[in-house]
Amino acid sequence: MISLISKLMLVVLLGAWGFATDITYRQEDKYHMVSDKHLINDVAYKKGDTYQMLIEIPTGSRQKWEADHKSGQLEWEFKDGKPREVKFLGYPGNYGFIPQTRSGDGDALDIIVLSENTKRGKILNIKVIGMLKIEDTGEEDTKILAITTNSPFNNVQTIQDMLIKYPNVISIVKQWFEGYKGPGRMIFQGYGTASEAIQHIEIAHKKWSDHKF
Image 1 (cartoon, rainbow, N blue to C red):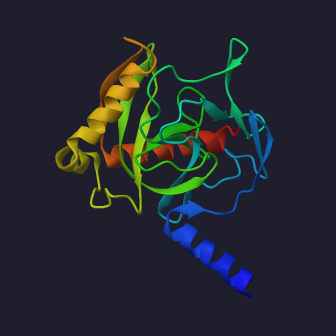
Image 2 (spheres, helix red, strand yellow; image 1 turned 120 degrees about the vertical axis):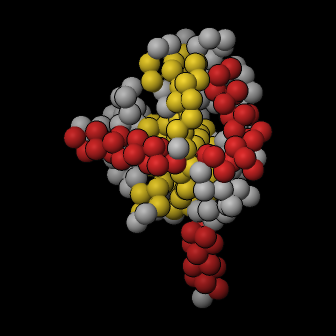
């Protein structure tokens, strides 16, 4: 009975902290995490009015993991025969994708959540506050910006709020994306509002609906 109560309390707490609890994983090897779902197709992009994201790269990590389109599983990306690590400072937030979306580059829509380090593979319930409009060698590479419901920034509703109340936070994220691939590769094109970001997500969801992975 105590064990059952403890489990129920854990589920309630995880929900309160912004976690979804319906995915299980096994670590196949050092480079693969196998789940019981296709992480792009089978995880809802939102529940009710709340959007969800799945973490590929936790805050502070340099390991470049991603969800494979075909298998829908998390893999450590390889480059030149070696597992890839970003040659820069670790990611300034929990980085990943919004499930059931397809962006202009054919991948699920990128998102960074301004919150403390959370385990790879977790789903976070998020509040979208805006987006960074970025070009990567001439191609659109938009990054959705979000916070969690238990965030120290929970008084923030939009990117405008963040720029006024915590201006250095957005500056850190912007400069990180401009610099992590080397000078001149990632070009900042401006900010998008929360409403623009939500519209961008819904368009990406429609593209996914028409052409699933």
